[in-house]
Amino acid sequence: MLPPDDHVHSEWSWDTTAGSMERTCRRAVQLGLPSLAFTDHAEFGPRVLTAGSEVPDRLLPLVEGDLLRPAALDVSGYLATLERCRAAYPQVRIHSGVELGEPHWHVDEAAALLHGAGFDRVLASVHSARVGTGYADVSSRYDEQPAYDVVRDYLHEAAALVEGFGGFQVLAHIDFPLRYWPAGAAPYDPRRHEEEHRRVLRALIASDRVLEVNTRVPLHPQVLAWWREDGGPAITFASDAHQPAALATGFAEAVRVARAAGYRPGPDPHGFWIRD
Image (cartoon, rainbow, N blue to C red; front, side, top):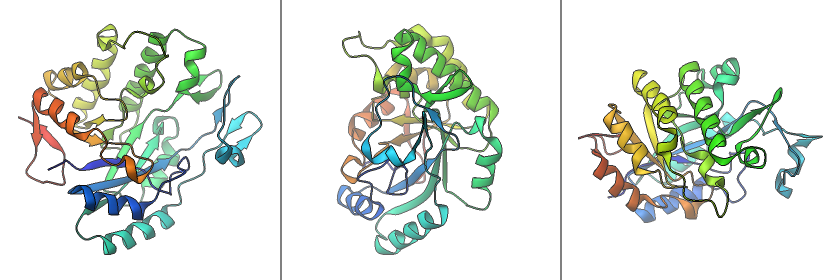
């Protein structure tokens, strides 16, 4: 049996084009997933569009000058759709959730969103990097910095998130910058940033939170080995799917790597995987 997919997006995420909660649930039933969590984006600040930034046509309405302002998450609309899907697809457990973007930069706004929402899954993530007095998408940093410096700075910001914001359960995609790793470069070696990785992982462990194994880019086994070695209590699996067809992509291999690292299903088939 495949594990739960605890990081999925629907039409309620501002950056989706083919997202559909209903069709994703139908796909989950086809795959035999025990459960999934719709963790749609909640972003709280604009991103600076740096020189050469390309904005898809669908996002142009969100652009004001040199800023892209992500649309706010419509929590009531999201929850209403979720309840309809729960009624229509009782074969699969459907968790509510949210992915908070850089909540340590927007503590009050993030806390206000979470207050009373009762989300089953709360993820936190870093998608942006500091640029002057603003923020820009991490992918744009490769045009300005050496590749390994981009990852180093990202890990510093991920550590600041974990240490500076307490209102989440799971750190999403610790390897997010690798989605944009420069073409033609040698494969990334996390051992070059071992200290930075371990700072993030140990902060998660100290606060009894969970590491996500995101399959958009397969998590390097070395990172998972450090997590296990330092006492990481649990992991989740995440396709980060923005369309139904991407649900649970790469999970078979991710499960193999997780088992080799010393993690197994917990007593709750809808819960996190735990240490052997």
